Image (cartoon, rainbow, N blue to C red):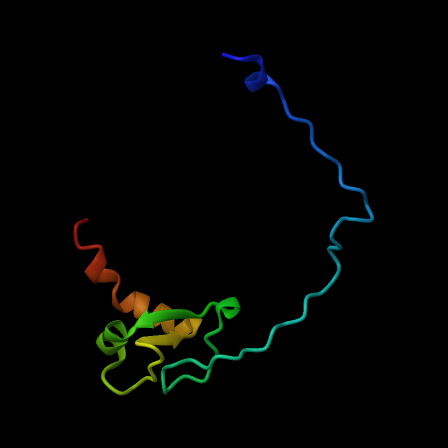
Length: 96
């Protein structure tokens, strides 16, 4: 073994003027992409937890015509994604 692997690395101290302020509040980003499910009024932006499902997966959960398609994908909000995930949970873990 070499001696370099046994050394403890020193922490580099960041000057107090360069540190992030913990008290600073972040502005909430507004949603831009609406959820593709017609019965939902939330937003499907990535920073809000939105996902993109295939058209076939959306048909299995919500049925034909209950959503809008964009490039063979359906943009869904976080809550609709949870519904889809719960609906498909039993099918994927059948080997246990």
